[in-house]
Image (spheres, rainbow, N blue to C red):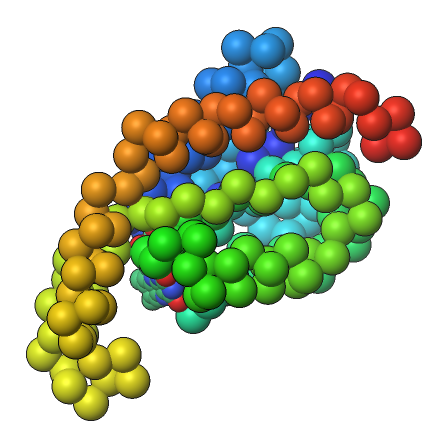
Amino acid sequence: MHVLMIYSSRTGNTKQIAEVIENTLKAKRASVKQVHQESTDLNERQINDLIKSADVVGLGYWADKGTANTTISELANLETLKDKPLFIFGTIGSDPESEHGKACYTSVNEAFNASKLLGQYLCRGKIDPRITERMKKSQAHPHSMDEKRIQRHQESMQHPDAKDIENARAFSEELMIRYEENSNIR
Ligand SMILES: Cc1cc2nc3c(=O)[nH]c(=O)nc-3n(C[C@H](O)[C@H](O)[C@H](O)COP(=O)(O)O)c2cc1C
């Protein structure tokens, strides 16, 4: 099984999850190619060629305004992704079990509307402290910082934690099983 993973990560949370998934899949003898969008400069034709040559594609996002960040969301338009077995992973500053977290998860699944979605993994990630500081200073910001929000930002700094990593590993193992078991997906 050849897996292509395309992901965006500005501050390293999603990259950390991508690496756990890659290592787990490789331990199960899959071959994996990672494309970290911020470190590469592939054009659309090159991306399409990589997608065509993969058995499974994994897309990794960070939550931006309650959905996948733009550079990953845009990939939903690619014809080559239609009918491709797909998995999605992401990190989000809020608790994934909160209303906002659940809405993000649903929004991303709907945006990709994949006919062969193997699953989505979403966990919490650290919020860049520069954003926290900026929001504290700007009381005019639509998300002005009350005590609860400050606390949520602080809690995010513990993530991804050991449990998030373990869950990402379990998700990756489950992906292999789902791919192997579902003969329609091959
Ligand atoms: C511009 C911007 C918008 C964000 N929007 C959200 C959001 O809507 N909801 C949320 O819970 N976290 C939001 N976050 C937090 C990130 O999704 C979170 O910190 C993520 O783990 C960052 O991933 P990365 O380290 O891979 O870049 C936002 C962060 C940035 C920089």
